[in-house]
Length: 302
Image (cartoon, rainbow, N blue to C red; front, side, top):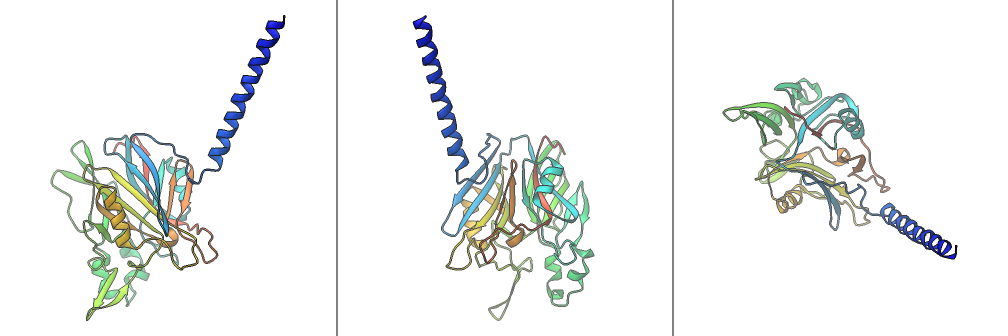
């Protein structure tokens, strides 16, 4: 009888130790500084990189994974979480440019080979006399593309007016800009303009730190989604400039990259959690509804 009692006592004590250990483990996880749970796999990976003025959130999708990166849009502006829930996406990043006043696009979006969002239909863009000198460049900005080449899916970043490669059909495209890698095309895309050596236009503050979003492609064909989160600071604006963002993407092996809408639009969703990039004057996160996104879906065939 005594042996049985001692055995029961030992088992209960051992159970309490395991329970305490499990509880402490859950506490450690709940106090993690990582805002997104590290649900990782070999084919898709989320990471954060902390710098002096920013936290850079990246999602890398392997070229041989069973995930596809595609653009989506809505007729109205919606929170990034709405896109994720509607399309059952594992990851989503904010997409192209739009006019918050009339909610119309200022970037192209192509789905299944057809233009579904056309900046030429935005009268506030087309009829703006201040933009008339730059319209040709604005309507030929960089876009992230998905091709079907035989039975293979390929991704690229190129200008809107560039024809697809021989043997390939353009499936989807999301306009943004400027291209960041292999070179900055801010001038070629009408974001920046000079006169007599002086800057007379800098539409998105390319050289100033800010919240940013971008998409990149490595030589192996991996896709990298990057979102720059501002840090609270009394020293002034935080975040990254576009040259700094390009430099960072290069360290990840990215050789082609395109800037996406930034500032208050910058946001990234990954596996049920969302991070916003922009801070207001009080240091609060800005959660702005958006027009379009790039989303990562599993087993999307075409």
